[in-house]
Length: 265
Image (cartoon, rainbow, N blue to C red; front, side, top):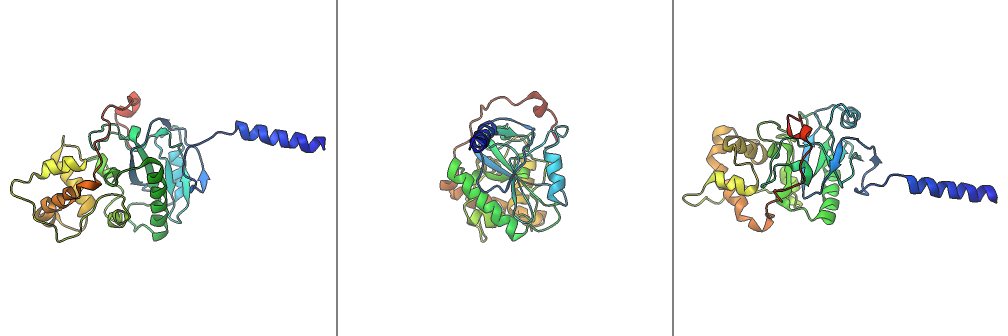
């Protein structure tokens, strides 16, 4: 009996000493990355890993020397791995901007998808992403306009999750914005530049904002075809004003200096 009691007490002690985490109950594994700092989430940034398998990506995302991480990685098979506590600031977006916020890492949940950038995203993987987004929205009330891609927040630097990512599918579930053609005609004097800023894009580089906008919303159109409809498309998105969230707090906790200068993510 004494041995049983001692084992019980030891188990209780170990449980009390075990690290706690804030995250989704949907995660299949908890493999902690040391590359993070304190933050609070108001948005989601979707990435692809560029790797051919999840194990390689996990090694990168948990390597202190690489100084890059994400809160979650979703495998091609739908397995969800949590890498960083949601209360912490994962290093995934790098130099970035969205909706008035120039430190996206301090306000976002980063989700990496196991994908090399040249392949379709498997339905099982997208189903897992939708489930995770539903869980995050329940706990953080994240607006549709604040579910974006790395290419949206890192203008001219990143292209992930790329032209094969199914943004329309996500938007049909309430994550991200979308409009199907034919688009309503934009009124006379409509400013595409102002519309892109209203959606969330960085106004500092209008040309880069247009390229990112096309990659997200018009990935199948060539430059001329995209230019012919982009103003009408932006107008359509703006008309869905009830789905837009207020600008993010533009005065976040200061980012670590090393992350403000030249981080690759």
